Image (tube, rainbow over all chains, first blue to last red):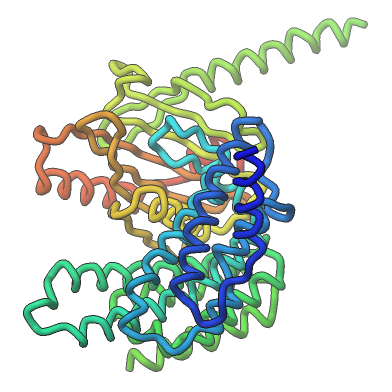
Length: 251
Length: 182
């Protein structure tokens, strides 16, 4: 009986939409869903099956983690976001790990490139959703982080806090670079490539501020390769615009 | 009939030569020879072959070369490296990694340092991905070091040396190993 009540409660949690503009609630739901997805994936893998992210409960867990609707309805970023936004980033990280590593032998410390390749191919649609969500989550995290730092007395702007924020910048730029590589591929679905490339282009004024000279060369290098690879003209156009903006910023 | 009788031994000879060649395949890296030791099962249509030093076992290795062949994910090396970077970031939080891409060659290199579970060891890994026609191959070098025996400066030297060598490493033999052209 307790199990039934537990299951009903879990279903209620899944079904209840997060209140609009409540970041704390949405982040908590995302964190819980990410753990649920991880447990479900482990269960499915142990049974020797593939994780199907298009059917419940996996699809619901996934939607909860990458809840773009709730995220879009949040009020402007503020220092107080720091109370919950790191939880959301953690949830995204857990869900990403679950997708990338599904089916890998948990006893092996090394990454399994063959498993990774299979998952990238099998979960391309979900990885696209996850990628675009992250491209929106990171700027908010940075804005909130800098607001938070600004709200602190000088003595409390510790090296640890500054280093933490610098780490977020690195992760954000890696996400952008990874997005270009992901979209600039001749095997990706054109619709997915366009959405990712458009998101990178839309946010260029934000992320390019953090790109230093040596890094800019690497970004341009991946953009050139992406343009060579993609078969989709609309995606290629996004890449051309991004490359031109980076080159203009250099001079 | 006679023709068939001659063809069967010829076919057997070719098969035997291929197997012998595969069994004795050697790759040289860091001034050392790595001999083929193991093929990871269940990878088809991809492939993953491990090469170790002659005096080391696959359980207690300190250096390992692995060749990878990816047949169904296209030939985009930067994407493969970027996806691996994503995994490293999520799986080993805080681990250091770096991706280098070369637009001229279409190749990509990623290196990272991860802890070995239940041990005092760290594992340094470097992958070089290169297109092979419409497919992709990768050369992986891994080295395990024991904390306390190697300090940060030595580890940095190992990394720099490996990155320098792999940067100019000719991937033609890796492609040839998998029977792939340019």
